[in-house]
Image 1 (cartoon, one colour):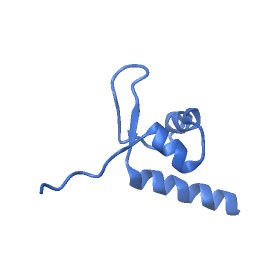
Image 2 (spheres, helix red, strand yellow):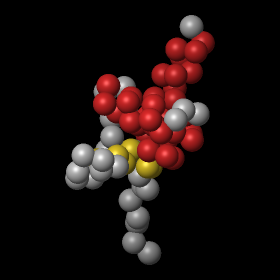
Image 3 (cartoon, rainbow, N blue to C red):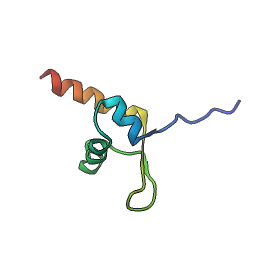
Image 4 (cartoon, rainbow, N blue to C red):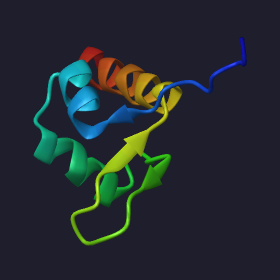
Length: 67
């Protein structure tokens, strides 16, 4: 079987995983706090995120919460 690329996460996936709202994830992307893997065309085109980037952000959140 062909190796399938790792599935990218939607904004909703990221929001659920990080325990924040979809709007918060979009704002984080706009602020550069999370880097989308790609953005679909159009003003409201959805973002897709690399799971490794989401994990990095989650660790940052934990560090911030711990300090």
